[in-house]
Image 1: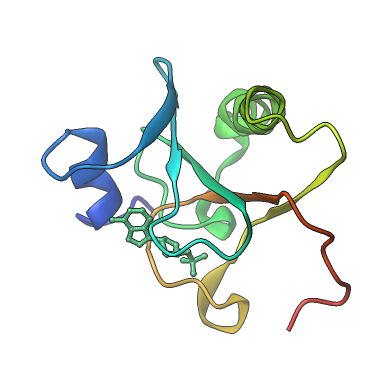
Image 2: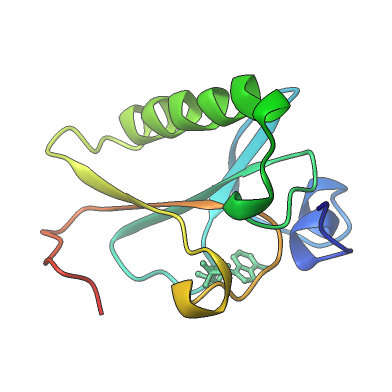
Length: 115
Ligand code: AMP
């Protein structure tokens, strides 16, 4: 299932501002507006996939690209001491924006388990 119009679609189209740190043909990365760590960046596909559970097998290259984008963006953000990658999926996952996004959280030690 593709996502409906979300705030992230507007960020992709530059209709609302965001602190964009990386962009290519397939992905966009920007700083979270409500950071939960000293570094909190979201990586999203430009293709409007609503959530991880909606990704299809034909999306496998895109999904791999998103993970490699996380790696690249984290390196560029200076997170050489490690970081956490989170995908909230659906209601129980705590997802609030229906456009797939990977959280990069870093700059402090991350406890486990998350809440
Ligand atoms: P989730 O709870 O996994 O769906 O995460 C959605 C994230 O999007 C939250 O961490 C929000 O702070 C973030 N967010 C919502 N609106 C914006 C925005 N306009 N710019 C940047 N981040 C946003």
